[in-house]
Length: 254
Image 1 (tube, rainbow, N blue to C red):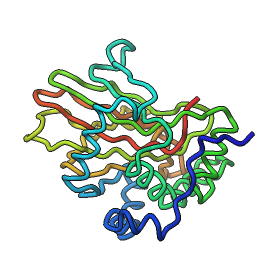
Image 2: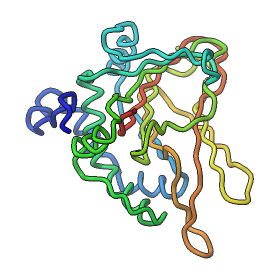
Image 3: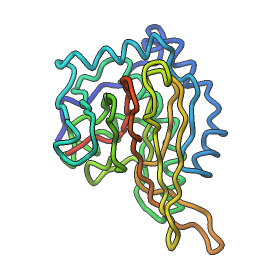
């Protein structure tokens, strides 16, 4: 069944006319180097993906409830402290642009990881085609979100799965300035390898930096071939101030 809420692909010339700098930044990223980091550690930092003004515009969206389909207060569900809101369709233009422009750049690595882990599912090059796959499986709710933390807030380690169809990579973009807008509140990743203790990674991001990281599992080369490791992510406790993050997740939710 076709779903009318599916976002339409944006023609490249039209998108470039409205957001030339962001598209150029994404096109000109050092993708081979980012893929190498993702293969090595399951994550890769994109310095300065967004400018300060772009971060300010996105932060201001948090106070506009008409843009969102739901709000989650973490303490009510045992997720930590703080809150977040999931955007509704149609997504705001900068969020849609980030989602549609980053996805095809990540597809080759995602499919290579699937092959290395012995998973038969492959991801199409076009994001609307993948979303249609999600929607046909009743995963129709958009998943990009804005997160807001205040003093004492934190986010427990978790994975953003949402249903049967999961794209294995996602992007988090820090919209606030460390030490100026908030203190503490580091993004933390943990990686659990078979028969080993978990490996923690604390990611030091500046305002506008993006972090690409594995949603759930990724392959790691071992002496006897590739094996799977599990990743989780969270945010450490804020000491003061307010922290906002944009989460760009490429699969939709049930």
